[in-house]
Image (cartoon, rainbow over all chains, first blue to last red):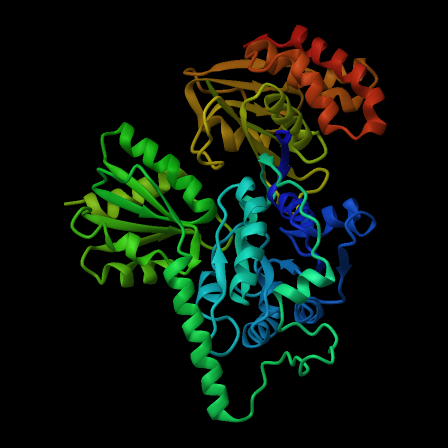
Length: 361
Length: 180
């Protein structure tokens, strides 16, 4: 039977999709513009239906450590927050990566730095893809640009997190979180049974049977030789992810003379920029990274020789633009355009910026 | 067919819920729909606005340069959005909250005294549905039956007894809107 098309906010889609993808637990703390994730889960009361735990922790730090605990037992657990709250979670995220624990983190970004504003921003790109917490680790970072993708990426995030035993993060922003669009929710997946978890997560702390040694889940290893081995193993895993999990979308790029690179809500705005530019006869295309890490460097580098310039369009002061420049190894001119602190650019502003940076003689 | 609409006024006037009902009506009609609120720290008396896009094609940007239709319900919104209506577009305002005349001559301007009509109906909450009725008279982008179905979807069931009042307000709004 075809699933019903519904109208809902991006935040609500995250919550409803989590229940349907068989999540075992959500631990969070309210913050605008993502509070509807927790609110929707509380209203839906999945503990009465699927048995999913939903808990408002006493702080973001507590919430991420509850995720650590749940993930250690092989459960599908998640948390969500917005920028300042995600900063608080960074220690826990590094520990999760160091202990190779699968989990899903959602960041519905707002303007910073500091407590900043509650309006949309994309200024947490560096924090998401270049660290955030300490140590040589990576997060699988998915950037939805529609309410439908907010729902879909909950499933994809969990899938990739468990496939690679690594935290995955959905990097959204206030626009995608707050706007309502049509969405088709996934069918109900039952939560995994204890037997299924034991089979699929032999590393999980699930109680020690007589047949094996006890499982230890930790990021601590005081012997540097062993710690280096751990790190080498992580790096091999990251390389595998880079080889297999790059996702991106191209829009009107075939004959493009100039290229926009944008993710999330910026990519939606840039679609309109492409439409408007082409109406004026300017051959513009858009490449939208869906995975921010692994970054679609190879896909972008293919435009060397084809386009005369690339504009990285972000709601920040110029973060992803560095990865775009690395991708093309400075063989084509790459510029950045952004608005800061919660102000969102209009399609006209972006098109004007493109003309100013590339088309002025 | 695509309609790019901004509804702007004071918080508490029902701006966001009017947009929501319009969005649900579009959903019922099988259209593509985007509802993007200004979600600042608004409260009753502060400014609030919502962008609603109804389209037969997939919708790109939820953030727009200019609008086909602007529904203006207070002076600050008039100051902000009068210039953002596309040439040949539509501007609808409630004269109760507007002190300055519309200066644009390249757009179609309509006035609806919804505040007065809501007072006559002894129901201040009918205000936004009167406006919606006026809009649908000028630009019937969705069928009335789909608006009522949309109302049902967007209202919690405990408020479904209010649907006949809302329907009456929509129909009254269709009668009282006038060209300026």
